[in-house]
Image (cartoon, rainbow, N blue to C red; front, side):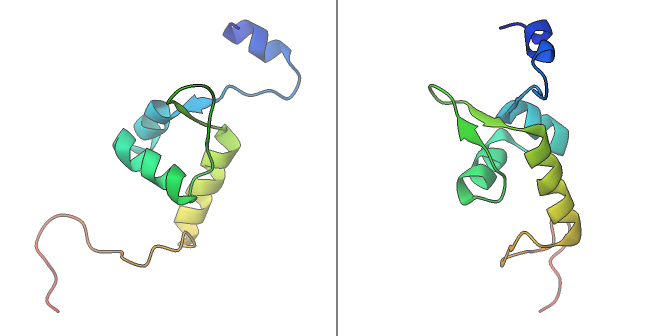
Length: 85
């Protein structure tokens, strides 16, 4: 099915694959896959091994991340020097 066929279906948006999500979020594909498997980012598999994410699910994930409600219990500062404990 081509992109022009998909746009003809009312209410249908193009699904994103994990590599596209990783580009948008500037994170490795492996990280995106683990977020999907952990249930933080809603995604599903069609066929073999590719994860698909609906654009609305990605938007909801970003909003939740901005609000800090994703439920991460092991947040640590990234890069640079370690903070004194």
